[in-house]
Image (cartoon, rainbow, N blue to C red):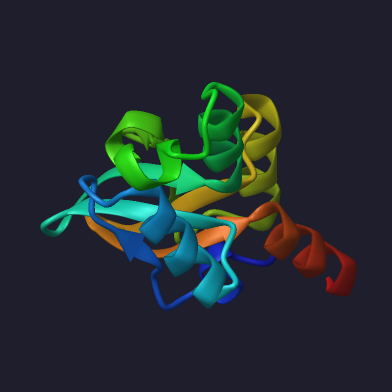
Length: 127
C-alpha cells in the first residue's frame, strides 16, 4: 500500500492571490509544475492550475488578461485536499470523481505537498 506522502511533490510551488497571471505562470513554468498553491499568509486559499490559465485566455478577447488579472479571479478557491497518509488508490478515486489533476496534500492542518495525476500513475506503475 503506497501512501501519498511517499510520492507527493515538494517543495511547494506557491503564489499570492493578488499575483498577476503572467507572474504566476512564470513561477509554475520555472518550477516545471502544473499547479501552484495559492497562499494568503500561511493559509491555503486556492489552487491555480494549467487549466485555469487556459480558461483565463479562452474567456478573454486579449492576451492582456495575463498582465492585468489576478490569480484570485481564476483560481479554484478552497480546494479539496487529501491527507498525507491516504493511499494512492484513495487519492486517485478522489481525483477521478471530482475531475482534478492536482490535489494539495495536508498533514493535519499543515500543507505539505501536492500530488498530481502523473505522480499517482507513476506510483501505480512501479507498485
